[in-house]
Image 1 (tube, rainbow, N blue to C red):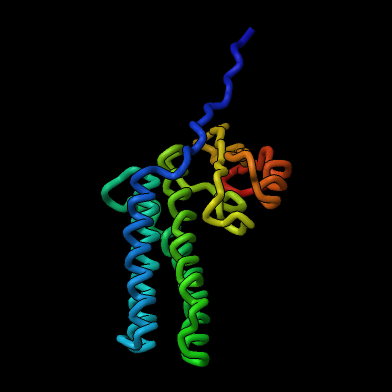
Image 2: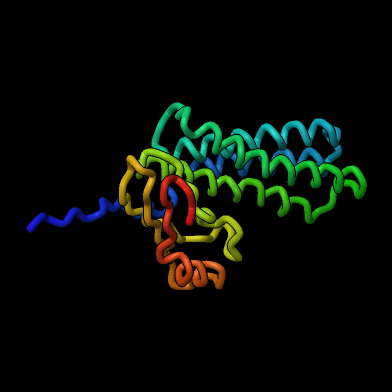
Length: 201
């Protein structure tokens, strides 16, 4: 009787690393400093928008590299980084329009921080790359589109069914006691999701 070959299961992504937390704290200071400059009227709206765009790009790249545990950006992740960052830049275009039409509002300080929170999405893409050697098309990353946002403690548990064919199974794993409703629903529905031939089924 032939032996059964079991799927190779990659380790579930751990909670965000100490390195990521350090990076987020550093970028938080930069985002907050930029907001302070706007509150004081120290910079123009155009200068603010330009610097915000740079910080968004830099924070996502640093987070993705942290997830992938690499000091240099892997070429295979470049397209993913560009796609994720472009979504944030589209949001930023709308934000800039609001600032120009309304002036700087106190509530914008919290809105700015949401751009930093989104960098955790890039961290999880990098972690996926570290675990299975590529980015596979899953429906969402932890903290992406969830009610809990940056407080998300969930992860993907990815099983490699046949890497050569692009076949994977991925299960959404709850990581906290007080999970939000979005994550609870994902754990029920995405248990697992299947990628076959590199395409999400």
